[in-house]
Amino acid sequence: MSCHHVELPDGHRAIVCVRGERRRLAKCVKCEQRTADRLCDFMLPNGKTCDAAVCAGCTSSPAPDVDYCPRHAIAPTQATLSL
Image 1: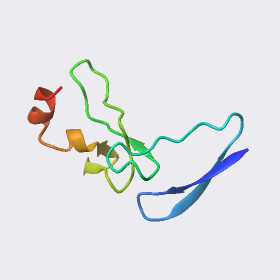
Image 2: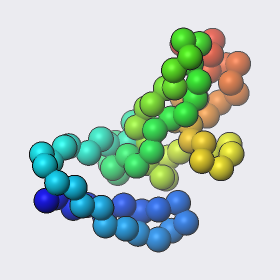
Image 3: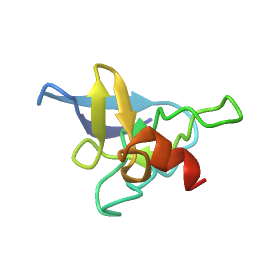
């Protein structure tokens, strides 16, 4: 069983343990230092979300439970045009 520490949005910390193969945790696409604990929720033209891995410190949250990566944190019309 492998365990890792996760920082929650409210500042508390949790220990998460999983059984089976240990999967490599993704690094944040912006800082490339911290472990990514959320995915970008920006809706792409194909109907899917961006899903870029982002850490708590680098995310932009325009609404509760919504996180954007740095690329999609800009105005939505600009982000759509840059795809």
